[in-house]
Length: 485
Image 1 (cartoon, helix red, strand yellow):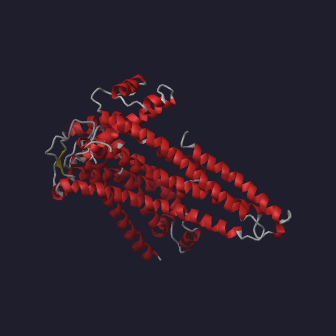
Image 2 (cartoon, rainbow, N blue to C red; image 1 turned 135 degrees about the horizontal axis):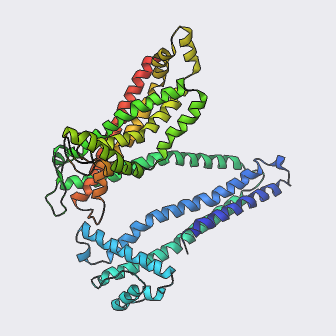
Image 3 (cartoon, rainbow, N blue to C red; image 1 turned 180 degrees about the vertical axis):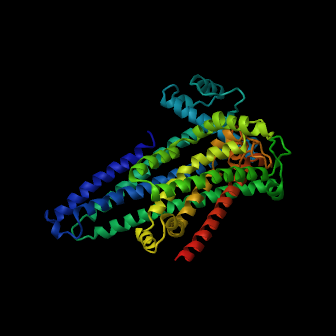
């Protein structure tokens, strides 16, 4: 049975409980809602919450805990030769999960029977059955791996059945409890309001918990990296040359320089153009012009970044090479910092323009009228009244554009290349932190090696960099807001 059926059964039971509790509560009042403590639908909502919430929470907790318990049980049966190191353990578990997933798919497609998959004690017979079902099993695949895959699939089946029984049992108990309290004198409204409050608090905490989870996941892996590689070499070395055979140079300075250089060029182009466009649309453009120009600018925000990357690779890069870099003797490559920066700046224009336009429009008209009443011109009003009032929001828009530029990957891959170097020449190929994070985690990687773990150290550095930008922007916003107020 698919795992999706269990929550669907729970929701169906909760909906049925809604109508049953509402009818029962109404019947205890003789069909007169005026005699009830709460509205009839509130009793139904109470039953729906008591039926669905505990069961779904229990199901989620069991689902989250299952992989850890399952992996621990399967690993306990593996020989020491397959668990001698973290890398070997990771490879063994990956192979077990792959074969177990193939067994599950083959059984669902009826190309493999459950008896052949689970009851084959002879490894040769099991290998032949799996190969016949289209599961890639080589003669070098050990018997321990095949037995582990059997155990993994069997554990999956038992866990799915146990989870369904426990979750549906919790839903049934919650429904019985809610129906017993579906009486006219019971205060169901308080229970429903507390449930909704908890739901809202949970929704509000999702972003916070997600951020905490991201930070801790990067911290743990970065800690493992710095146990194997010197932090001084990582932060202060100017060489980036990862070699999975050993002897790697993993200095982040070339990557950080490329990130900041490309982002700076992008912001130099995007911020003035976007801000001037926002000022024109909000203060000078007619209603007809605004209705045409604003949607056209915002179209740029919906273009996929891979399209911008292709535009940089095919159009912008060759133009800069043929008409600027080559004639001035600055380079002969179409992939360069300037190519990626200019195209990324085009991508960022709608972020700066749209947000700044909304912020400028939010400035009260009374401020403009007061400035006009004192004899100021429209340009003077924009410079000395409107922009200072909108400055905190404009700084936020610029910060969003900067964060987007720092985290961009596809435009850099296609427009700037992948060379990690320190250079002031904007027509040379360079790369960024995000590109190297992707490259270090692509392909068959050993998560115990520093060449792979360095991606988490780079990610943590990028997170700290954006955090510093936020702190600086907050300081600027508060300073100018105090001056204006």
